[in-house]
Length: 360
Image 1 (tube, rainbow, N blue to C red):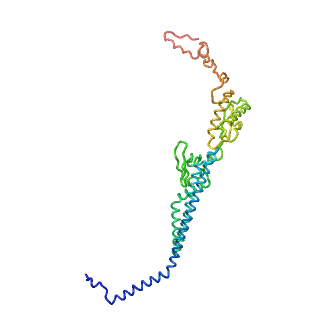
Image 2 (image 1 turned 180 degrees about the vertical axis):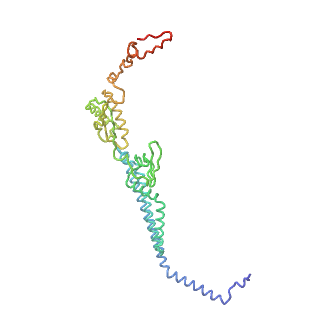
């Protein structure tokens, strides 16, 4: 092992080492002196880019939040008015606006911050071509790997923007049907008729039948005897319709007069009268049940018989069983002298050998 004395520089080498160090320090100082202005300008530009980017992001996000809040307040104000629950569903409007706001905020943040990062890298004199090429290849790979997720997301965005359905709507999505409980960018949640919850991916929905938009039709078919007077039937049903349209809550649920469409079917034993009415969306089944109830009561009061119910008094008399029908017709075998009785009489046994039989 060498001694510590051998590790010390020689006296002849000290000036050379000191000169090299002095030259390095001088060169570094000269480099800093020549470039400090450029560095300062670059730092100020980067700082300005970041400040502007974060300021724009904050302003845009706050503006979108205020816009969403204003939309929700408008929905709540309309909901408290007459027919507000029909025209505007506050929860549906809130979820739709929140989803749209979330998408817009995310897109704004991505565009602003992404542009700021590219500008900062450009100020640092970093070649962006390889980076953009790599990002493009990575984006293509992620797109192929997560194409179902991208499809669900894009389908959800367009469904929300186009307002195809919302919370509270009754829809038929093909793969499932029920009432919309929650609308998301990737999954739509439905509650079925039996209470089950369906989670349907937005990308799997190929067609949508919305049963809650616009208006619905309530249709009632009544079967009566073909001997009933059509003018009397129309008069009784019209009285039922007029009385129902003046009573609450049916005056709001009916969006048009109850119409007697006429005979829907004519058979030998019955004829069918069709009644129709335009109603609020989702209220057609309640209107149909109430119409059947009132028509049955009105027909009973007017003495109009409905096929399938209890028979009327005249029908019971006409259809009474004949007492003689239970009595069997007389048999020809009851008369011993009839040809049938003689044909069925037993043949007498043959005579004994000692007593010959005399025949004619």
